[in-house]
Image 1 (cartoon, rainbow over the protein chains, first blue to last red):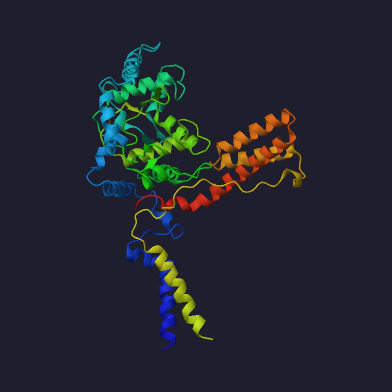
Image 2 (cartoon, rainbow over the protein chains, first blue to last red):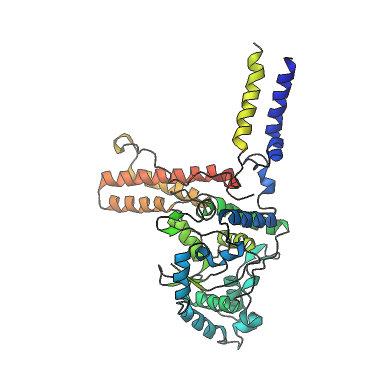
Length: 295
Length: 124
């Protein structure tokens, strides 16, 4: 009689330590109980879990509706945004981008020769390049096109580069994000690095991207409602009222980092490219609707 | 004599089970809170020169950068300390230098505490 309870309690303790009880109750695995193997190594499971999370958090809002960002869940802001779309402020950037797109380099070649389908290629970026073992973004591809034609690279975040990517985003509208599922070890590592970046708290305010866009999504931070992570990549570049100019996705990443008191990383550096890769995979199948306007 | 041997593992097991049996999809739901700066050592008790404190703050800040966790506030405090030192406002310069040092130390501590914590913040 005395031995049984001891053995039983020891068994429970052993099961808890080995993680068996967590698994049987369907709860999450602990941070230090072997989660390393299931974080970032099953991207499709992550994508489905995130969609289910938002469908549960915002009943009646289909997951794909988050392509409109905050306007999917904030009716008054949506009405204002739809009015803005009648005379969108990104139009100038699109026009200037189109002109640049068809202006030949000294070699006589234009961007249209580098990017097939008249530039409607945004859905193919970012992608993981196995040869360089790194994530390739649209902005990098634009500069690769320039380098191939013996033209100096554009500065990341520059107006010229943002205008070109705005034009490419515009002609790519209605295409669906189609990032190939990371399967190789290197691609999975890049995806996992992006996921880790997204979930890591930074800055003296101690915020992770997930703090605002998963944990507090739909709630207010000061006067602004917080959007869902899904669809964050579909509408960039954006004309940002606060900046009075076009803004790339990586500039927005840097702004978010600064806002929480963290030193931002280099635009198109490995950290932000991995982050873009991770976020883009999560938005797979969602319609591209950039460029856009945001507050 | 035998009772503690029976109950201790049971209590530990129950505590562990109850702590992990939530039904939420995101395990870490702790609201984001700004990290508070630890109380400054008063300048009078710090025997180092302001320049030495600034140099140490810069070393720690560089370390935080290499860990990917540098804070912009650290840089601001360093810049301010250097400016005040140049203006010969010694007391304020030392306070800013100490703040820079503490801020850099806290950013490094954050990188350590986030090593595993990030894994509980994504829906599963």
